[in-house]
Image 1 (cartoon, rainbow, N blue to C red):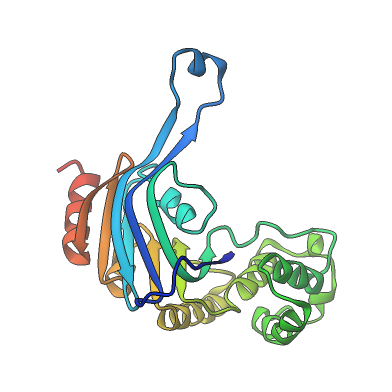
Image 2 (cartoon, rainbow, N blue to C red; image 1 turned 180 degrees about the horizontal axis):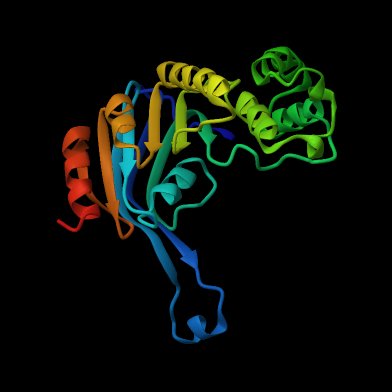
Length: 246
């Protein structure tokens, strides 16, 4: 989870995301590529969209189409190579929830460390810890080093930390599930609450019923470009045709 605030001015329409001719190019590291004057791979090419409070945008496309790159660019992980990106509001991003854990530290210590990574002070973290521990259902395991955890326990802790904060803008790469069926149902409810509380949602997913339920508009991406922007139902119909070669 990446939590970031980008405030460009004090105008209305808070929060907002405005992308104009947005481009992201990955550099090519090989010497032969440089000799052939190849500057890099264009992962996003001429992306345009505008989101204001209350909007929920879905991202559809085959693997490699640019969905995850777009999400990470919005989160500030990748810098734009061209165009403009105007973002205003507190951002929460859910990509790989388990990254950044220290295996020799306890679950409780990792909560504190993750909180610092998100820019919280100790008092803010301390206030969140009881709720995170309760939601994770780890009990006494919370004070054991996480290298002793099962993969399910680690994911439950990561999910509990990731979803403990509220934000203006929520970016998600697929719908996050965690643990056994009982915990998964609880996680689903928590995610629904996050969607309800966030003012702007951007969700990349191949789960079309989910996109229909959550998102009011969609971008369909192909080869790093937007080939459709509009109603979710129409976007899904077009994507199915692209996916199936129709």
